Image 1 (tube, rainbow, N blue to C red):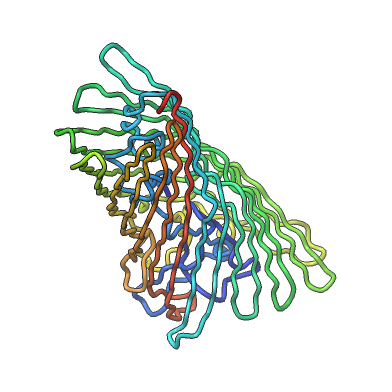
Image 2: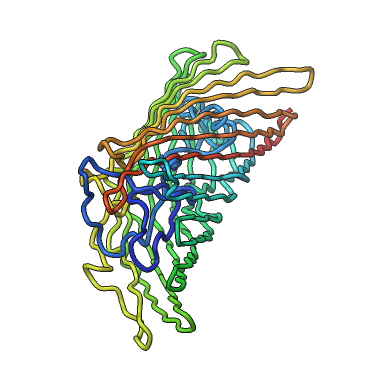
Length: 463
């Protein structure tokens, strides 16, 4: 499901660099998409204090687990371990023993470099962090001829934890974030006939992020702190059909929902020895998360070989945030000033873009994923080898008005030791596109993302 990230680009005014942005799941880079027009529309005042970075991790239906991600995330029809809840809950029906699963992401980095039309660097944005990714307890169930499993799980759908530096001429910016958009899910997968498996999860979205942003400016410094906490409910539904024992066909649907957001912000602006303060909080903010659908196929021609392919569409064109606000800067001797419309309070903005330079709106994201697994079997040892490839269409638009598509390469391996399964996966994603900054200057953006996942699964009674 979709590395999101949020950051403050310019805490006292407009950023001197770009227009578009990156991420909801990774403290990503900022790089706002441009439009076909020579000069982009004027952004709402001060809204670019916040740059919501979702690129290179924009698909919120992307699931968890080193095994799945080592196969390029092509797991909708092959979801046969505990992480199935995050891909296709129908796959929980494959589990036949009590199982404990843990997934950690010790490496989650994103680098974005912006250059002008002469090739000179304009901005170098680097982010790195680590985060818990998934944890679950699964227990087998049976109702007469119907068998399957029930599960309670935790997933960090969008991780914000990490440190970020943004190097631009004349300004030093540092961002520290913690937390993430988390999901507690209660679900089940059941094999209702020999060829049909069904599953569902009921998901409680909770938590959020805390972020601190410090900027050293020519005329002083600015520090902003934000607490963004959300809550909401949605559900996932899945089906896996096996017309032949070697072939699985899978489908999944995630329902859209509106999250309640408690947003609190403070800022301290310092010039010389004089500091001013402002702060405000509201529980009236609402965030529209999109629904998603996905289909996949997985073929196992031999017991040791699996090949899979998936397609997922997430309806980010309907992503919006309501009653969002920013904070004005105060002057010496002035009391804290509440945000006022239209400068600081916005009834509806696109999310996560906040500011759409194209005027055409956000687009739906899509992922096309391919992957395979081959298992080497020794006397008492099994070692799986995995590889994958995916195309990741983004939610924002580039200079030509079309959403850019990033490319991903994955590799993974593991070891099976009786009841213990240890897996690791590496995901590399990259993309290039042109955009405009808020002044209408053309920029070339280069994006590189690196992620490492480690999984541990213990199956009670396994051998």
